[in-house]
Image (tube, rainbow, N blue to C red; front, side, top):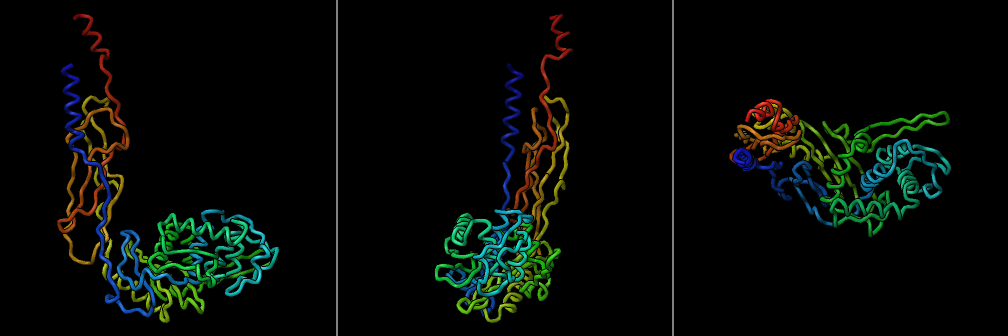
Length: 378
């Protein structure tokens, strides 16, 4: 009994020393209109990793979005189909006004080609063809788009069609369009298409080449998308995104006469004011921890995740604080949290990384062979 109580006491001490980990990232305050000068009626600069808007101008005004609508169209399509899906072009997709892939009734294309036509050529007929293939008609597909918007927590966005042609009930805000773009860029297929400048599809009976309307792809170093848009009612609309040095920024303008310049100015502002700092790589810290009551005397532990911070550019005092007990008690399962590393930047806690068991150790069985021999003579 005394031995059991002692083991429970040791285990309690160890558990008391462990603080379960969580990740925090240093936030960056939102800057309003005075930070930058843009031509847009509405604009934002967004850093998705820390969910921070570095710049905003009328960010929550509901406005038409034109063909930037197709960011959501593509995301919903990718999530509800396969690139290899064979699509027979519906009559409803023929003759849709605006940008076109010049589809004909009965044409047979893959979903992959339609997505390239949608995002590069900004083809409105491709948007309708996608909607009809997935949902049967435009209205049902628009409902899917609104479901996705709701799932993203958006309250100032509503879709009535998959292409963005004018409708009073079809609107978004610069802020929410940035969130849509961020969600889309998390999808590797979407990102691959949106960052492509030119794509050709060749078959036995035809050949089509789609060229991206987004000039940012060659105007701005590191650009990875995203989508242009224009109608007389909406004005020039543009969603941009660029990646450098482990950082990604998303820029949005609605009704912007000088959109290319606006986006260059905003993206430059982001990269000039923020930087990514690697606090820890995976398995930077590996230790052998003594085990009490286990079949093995030691167990290997390590940080299996890395950590990073996104900070304002400056000279920073980065420190790490390791919290790990001197020993642990069996049984231990692989993945059990046995400690943590706390990172501080300029005296403020910035991130925590768990130290995990990288193997399992079973509890040593009592009453083994030697114990049985001794008990015979007791």
